[in-house]
Amino acid sequence: MKTLFFKTLPSTQTYLKELLKERNSSLPIAVVAEMQTAGIGSRDNSWSSQEGNLFLSFAISIDELAKDLKLESASIYFSYILKETLEKFGSNVWLKWPNDFYIDDKKIGGMITNVVNDIIICGVGLNIINKPDGFSKLDIEIDKNKLLEEYFQNLEKKQLWKQVFSKYELQFYRNRKYFTHVNGLRISLSEASLQDDGSLNINGEKVYSLR
Image (cartoon, rainbow, N blue to C red):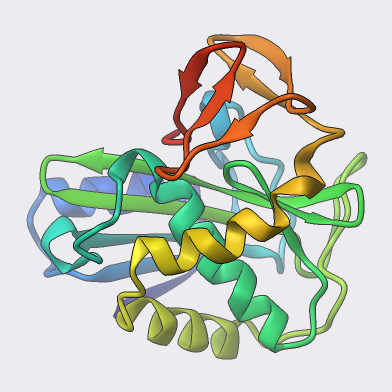
């Protein structure tokens, strides 16, 4: 994975999308910044940026992904592999459906995924050093370069969706006391049923995780 490092960017995701639009780089490629001034979170919310945390966006050709990956559930796939990578370094992080990283009951970051033509673009914000009010941070000290190296190596293994999902399914119970947002509405996960393709069945409605 070719990786570009910056001290400050408005948004790693915006920069990466512009780079791809100009066709100046081959895939896969990642962009990392020490600081963001206009970070993008889920549902187009801003992501509060504090220097030293992880601000990452990367792009991979769909042809290079696991053949059984459901693109609608790519958030779960890429987030869970990052969660496993963090666990190898000693973290107790867990993944709230579909794309939020938690330590105990506090959010420490998240991932957003977008499909643009034949490319999937993922953006990650993770509180490694500093935490905004109302959030928490990673429970271990970690070298970001080592984390990224390990994570990208794990992605290159192209784990099958069914392998990743089977592990995530065992931990889904941790979602029960939380909520998600569907069409702008705050929906309880207490009665949600996780489906094999990564979607949720909530009151008879099928909800996917791509965001």
